[in-house]
Length: 144
Image 1 (spheres, one colour):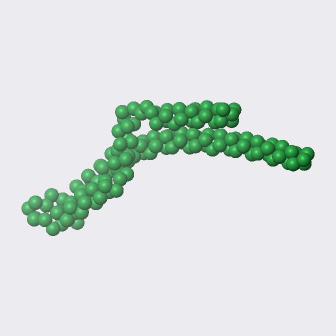
Image 2 (tube, rainbow, N blue to C red; image 1 turned 180 degrees about the vertical axis):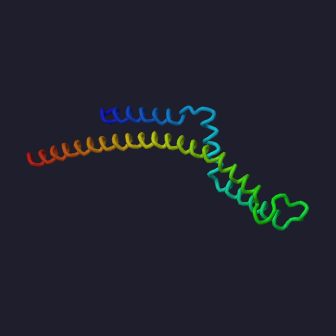
């Protein structure tokens, strides 16, 4: 095997090890919970759930039987209170989850940068060897 191939293989193994470490990065139980919440809240399914809940709540308290309405029509005070509590509870979890995702993203970016840097080095080496071969071919043709 050529030294270039051996070097490339060694570098690839190092990068694979770094990627495996990134994927197996240990998060605390709270971190994993924040990531799970972030994933759930950031889904379209959650948006549709909140939309349906809001529409049903407002419709029931606007058009339902008078005796069964629990949050009267113009103000919907209970609905506003519950909605604000949901926001107050989920906002910090979303921010923590985004911070964790940001850290992982930064590590991935560093690995990608390293891959690109090494690929550029390999390309320079290949171009250098091609230039050497071209000079040798030119020299051989000149000597004939």
